[in-house]
Amino acid sequence: MPLRVAIIGAGVGGLALAVAPQANPNLDVQVYERATELKEIGALVGVGPNALRTLEKLGVPDVLTDEVGWRSPSGIPMIFKHWRTGEILSTDQYHNVPDHRRHYARRHRAKLQQALLKRISRHIIHLGRKAESVKAIRAEGVTVNFTDGTSIKADVVIGADGIKSKIRYAFVPAHELTWLGDVVLRSTFDYSLVEDIREIPQDSSHFSGPNGFFFGTRIGSGGFGVTASFPVDSRNDGRYKEPVWNAPASVDTLRERFKDWAPVVPKIIDRVPRVRQYANVAGAELEHWSFEDRVTLLGDAAHTHGGAFATGVGLAIDDAYALGLAFDHVFPAAVAIGAMSPTRIREVFDLYEATRRPHTGKVLAVVHETRAKTADRLQKLFAGEPETDEDFRYRLTHRGDPVWVNEHDVEAAFVKVLEESASGQATPNTQVEDQVQEQSRL
Ligand SMILES: Cc1cc2nc3c(=O)[nH]c(=O)nc-3n(C[C@H](O)[C@H](O)[C@H](O)COP(=O)(O)OP(=O)(O)OC[C@H]3O[C@@H](n4cnc5c(N)ncnc54)[C@H](O)[C@@H]3O)c2cc1C
Ligand SMILES: *[C@@H]1O[C@H](CO)[C@@H](O)[C@H](O)[C@H]1NC(C)=O
Image 1 (cartoon, rainbow, N blue to C red):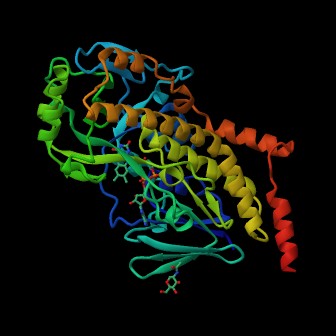
Image 2 (image 1 turned 30 degrees about the horizontal axis):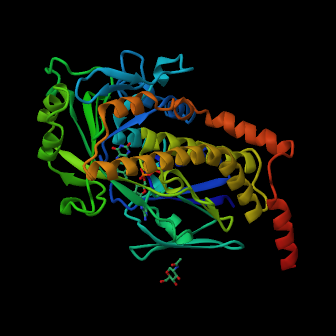
Image 3 (image 1 turned 180 degrees about the vertical axis):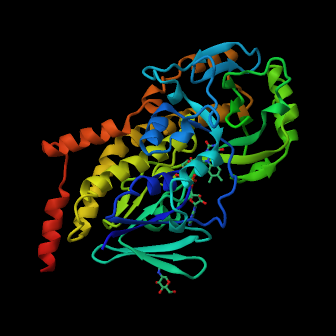
């Protein structure tokens, strides 16, 4: 009997995982998604060199075309401009990305979801199934109950249900998400709406200031995307008491907040047809991603980094790839599965976590350090002491180089973990523990 793997959530992470182990007859993968249809939700997402390489390995090459993704003609992944003067203050650079197709590509989130869906047989995707509770018993398996009254049993459950993960909550109820008070407005629309603006940037441009940012970029499939953020005093401003995620908002708010910015910014905003509002919430690093040797987490559910580095999609795709590699290593397609024990599932989870946690842990460390500084800055701002232009310029030009995120090689990390565990450097204390447990049960 194949291992029954239930993925909760058909976001980018869940779908990438459903693609990854598809050819392995030892795995029976099913995906459960609360939405009743996978329609166009979200706005623009950036897909960095790391994730583009992974998507190519996953056999989703159509996401690499210039038709679907827009790449800055300058060959620069990100350009930071002064909010008011528009002068270039800082740029990111590629370190080792000779292939143009792996250059940072901006696209609509839905296009990525659709490309992944094309590689998955539709009958394994179950829509309108919102997980409500989950229970794992190590020696038996996992039960998931859905809000429609149905339930499933599986050998393994993967919580790929996003930053507010129910699966995570079931096992780590004390984990908290906090909001700093930054409102993010997003929109995507036809490029034709802004095409005639003389200064319209062809390179993805991040206008940055002490009071937020405005990111405007062409995106694939003839689109244009805007992501803009500004701080609000959520304790004293009644309009922004709670962090709102994915709700309609007013273009007038955008217009008002950015009216003094470099001239091209208000010109673009004038053409924006509609916006939706999001809030970046974040939470601490988890101590464990896996529970009862039956359940693990993936993507935003596992690392609540809250949009930092604009790399949520990339991290989720690489998580999925690492977990797929770990499954294939422990349950190789060419070998019949044989006796199934939680110990072997634990081996999968150990490989997965050893591959991913050092990387995502580093991301979270940077996120929380940055958030602490931002909270400080906002406190001063609301007390009437905004950051000076000089301090702002210093902060922006002394950003860290995000190459370790953008060009991370998940497969190399996985191979290194395997080599280390073969040479006994890692800590597979699971075997010992399991022997103890198995013996105590005899
Ligand atoms: C509506 C939406 C819009 C987004 N827009 C952007 C954007 O414009 N730019 C950007 O950079 N990032 C955006 N993101 C975040 C980005 O998609 C993620 O950071 C990244 O893709 C990691 O994805 P994930 O698969 O871990 O989680 P997600 O993409 O959040 O996917 C989680 C999936 O799980 C489903 N789900 C949640 N709870 C349950 C449950 N109880 N039972 C069953 N299914 C459940 C959700 O419906 C969703 O399909 C958006 C996310 C969402 C959900
Ligand atoms: C699922 O629902 C059944 C029937 O209502 C209940 O007995 C069981 O405890 C629930 N399981 C979980 C994990 O909540």
